[in-house]
Amino acid sequence: MTKAIYQPNYWHYLTGDFLNRVHPRFRKAIKILMAVVIGALLLAGLYTLFEDNVLPTLTRRISEMFNYAG
Image (cartoon, rainbow, N blue to C red; front, side):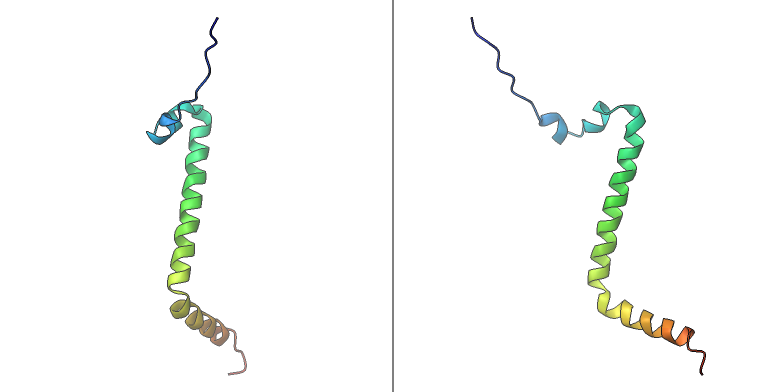
């Protein structure tokens, strides 16, 4: 007697079929989490690109705004 050995097929994860296999109640939550993670990565990338240009000007403007002595 031969036993069938289970061999998982991961191709459906690569073909974009993953969200269709998830319960409809959780699809929106997964999409929101994906958007948050992608947005955070995008902001981190922009921060590292423009750190030298934006932050010194920003800190100077904030210190000028709260300088009550002048």
